[in-house]
Figure 1: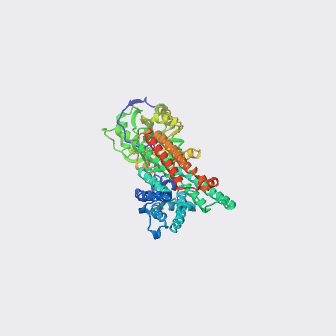
Figure 2: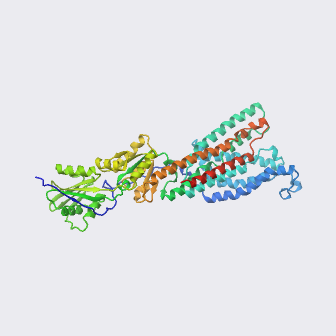
Length: 587
């Protein structure tokens, strides 16, 4: 007959961090590969940008002189320094000078052309394709004009030179890549749609305008000039900077929050998150498991049973095993032989010629019929969110252990902040359902998944993704690595282990979970600014499309001129500078 149980309450020191599902850690899969286009912002180097800038400055002087020289000579203003000797005074070399200064800038942007070639083969109208096509149009039209100027034909009757504008576009793109490399954050995907619209529109309008002027004959300029002008104006000078400036400003804010982005492009994806899934032990809780309760049976001595349990878990890696060792510190441990650790998380040994088992109910109930009193105590403990282990000797139950893990101080606030941002939350754990539900209720999580093995956590993430959710998974060790790797965004804490770091794109260096809603808010703001600025930079060039199409010539106007593009570029860059300052000052 079962004797009445005794209860003891203990408060041992905090145990080292481990996992609720003991066993052999599985190797973490490689992080989810990012799209090839999203890593392109890292190709830029500061050296190429500086080289392009050194040639852009004299190119600017030469371009301005080429445009104003005719006006000065028409008004009788002569500048001997810029005038060739009399035998060659009809030869205008300024087109050739611009070409020579423009070619090094073209060479500095050679990486863009490699990406453009690959995208053209794949039929992707990327920003690199747009920049390459615009540069080629400017180069060929400028080469034609430079040759004609050398032959003595007046600049006023020739297609204008757009070397300076294309040089500004290339230099700005190189500067944007340098910013992305410096800040290690990039948002290149927000350039894709504006580039698609501008390139597709330029090709369509060039065909329509070419055929219209060809059949009507109402043109006083080469028809190919329409095609070249439309391709040049289709590439906004601020397109690359429109996404790089918000990303660079966001990089400073991310560093101030002590957040490490192992993948710089993740900031441009994180705003799509619709659900955040937290691991329980060590992530949503402090990972400091304590042995708080001991219920003994058959008048078993509490200290002796605790020493026996500690002797069995000397090599155990779970948090519960560490908590038992900490609680039994200073106690004499009995000799044990044939010690075995079960995959289910239990331990078995031979002590004083008796088979002893220690572990969760699923493990010990195979050989022992647990009394009703044990179920009563276990229900009470699990109702308080505690983990329950059983100690059996032979076929009799001698002790029930209750382990408690403390919820992080900021856990409730994090759940509330995410709900205010319309993000659903879930908790995944290997604990039993009652303990998991208690934790979910205390933290305020929307959903709870209990009794999960490491591979089941990854399946849970895939199930959420199959339902249409964009998942951010938060974990801290190798047991969580499969879930972190298959999630859309993997997040780990700074105290997490190597496998968790390798499977994650975001690391919270100070272990503060409140940085998750902060980063989500920053990602949304950054994405909104990048999308808006890219389209506004494009709109500054769209207003010049009628001039590029030749429509203004029908009403006494001119074709597209470098002055028009200069005004559009200044307006675009000024707007981007103002928005960058506002983003940096925003809290």
